[in-house]
Image (cartoon, rainbow, N blue to C red):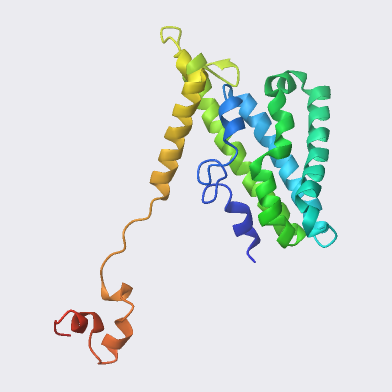
Length: 227
């Protein structure tokens, strides 16, 4: 198993938001500011890594009939820890994230990785899987939050960067703006990941070996042509 592959797959190739379209509610709700997206993303990453580790360690102990409730209990414990830490040390961010911080418990990204990966793999791959998926989720939230904050408020991480002569477009910090920005980001990622069509050549032909062995091209024979 390639540990690097387990880590990097969640960044772009299997990004929870931009490719698998999971965790849409917090992505659209808290990304009116880049700092909110960063806070939610890092909080989710912490919960994802820790829950993956614990579930991987307990995979042989947890009965299959009650595995989902057990997963939720594990995840809820780490969410409670994160909530208490933010409330104690970063109360402004805690207030901004609101109920969506508690809803990390039932985030389909975390439950999905627990069910599909952590419960079937060892601790280190599970931790790397959670870290990669969490950072991929964070990347999406920061990108969407940055675009919405820049165009909607003329700021980035609370710092004014737009000239006063350019009036911010309030639409971007409204729900409709969230849908628009997320759609544009997903479209760009899909465009980047789109594979080029295969070139037609003997190298890509499944019958290439028979041509070189002197039997002639089977494709041409089947089509009534000459080898």
